[in-house]
Amino acid sequence: MNTDKRKVVLVGTGMVGMSFAYALVNQGGICNELVLIDVNHERAVGEAMDLNHGLAFAKSNMRIYAGDYTDCKDADIVVIAAGVAQKQGETRLDLLQRNTEVFRSIITPVVKSGFDGIFLVATNPVDIMTRVTYELSRFGAARVIGTGTSLDTARLRYLLGDYFTVDPKNIHAYVIGEHGDSEFVPFSQVMLATKHISEILDDERNSFCIDGMNEIEEQVRTSAYKIIDAKRATYYGIGMAITRIVKAILGDENSVLTVSAKLSGEYGAKDVFIGVPCIIGRNGVKEVLELSLTDDEKEKFTNSKNVLNDSFEGLKL
Ligand code: NAD
Image (tube, rainbow, N blue to C red):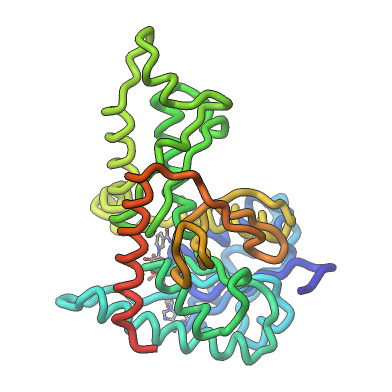
């Protein structure tokens, strides 16, 4: 991995990819070279021009250009936000199969370039596409990461912060499992600073209640649908989540983020890529943190893992 410069390649310059690029430029200081690649090269060229024209107003001094897969050779991270949209009448599995072909057309030339960094996948269904990236690249599991439930966790903290009127940064809570319908919140692990939420919910002096928690969990699970109904797609939040993960990697932060990572026996599972809290640093996933789940939460996790395994097994690689 390169140490003297921080270079990121973004494959897929659509709404999600460019929201990430925009956040990266505006947050500043995270990387100093950003390469944009898209099957629609003209679009990547236009996006690079547009971002470059804003550099005079940005904190960062970055080199941004539209490139090709040979540019991945000395990159630290390749972010993949490329994908095709569901066609009318197409099943989820058909879409998955088409996105697998898209990924083959990306990962083969990235690996051929000599790339030796970290893959970070945002394309949906993100847990499956991360596993596809792992299978196609044959990289070590620590170097293949999906955005997992990082955005869902941010949504959860925002909603809990609003409910308890506490800064979301002081709330320790995670959404784990599939980034999708079977994800869930292990409430046995939620803390407000150093206070367990069960203590707060049991305290009769306030009006906080478990129904409020269940409502919040449901809001997190359905918020992507609501945003899509309102504005067709979601992109700012995920763009910022990708930026956060890239920052944790390039800054060797050892931060805990709920990414999609490969399990190797944790939570009683192997091989599946699924959203779990992980320590993220310069070499990718340093450690998968295994939470002490209740029996009910363990059951939910197993269900989510089975949903992901079933989808993956239907794929032709
Ligand atoms: P988009 O259609 O705006 O952009 C997709 C881009 O991929 C396009 O620019 C397209 O030209 C490019 N592309 C397609 N095939 C390609 C190929 N073979 N090689 C290179 N580029 C290719 O879509 P979007 O709104 O940016 O969404 C991108 C993905 O992110 C989708 O799969 C979406 O579901 C996913 N997403 C994930 C999360 C998350 O939490 N992980 C959240 C929102 C969206």
